[in-house]
Length: 70
Image 1 (cartoon, helix red, strand yellow):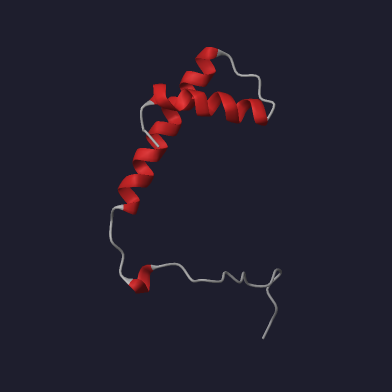
Image 2 (cartoon, helix red, strand yellow; image 1 turned 30 degrees about the horizontal axis):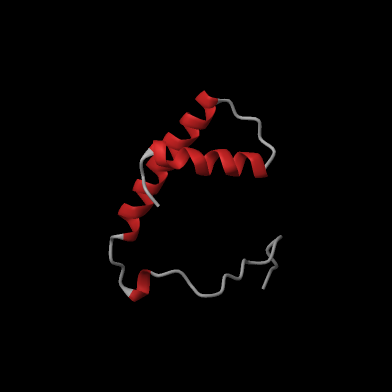
């Protein structure tokens, strides 16, 4: 996927249509710019190698709420 806002506008229009969001042209452009920036941030994070001990756990099990006294 390209990071150019102009290339992302068709995607934004399609997603907005599927979600029944009435976006005008200016709103579509702003969303596309934000999405392009978000992709650049995600790409920079994905490019950073992480050692295995910093990877998230395979299964997330939240603590009980409210906490139980042991």
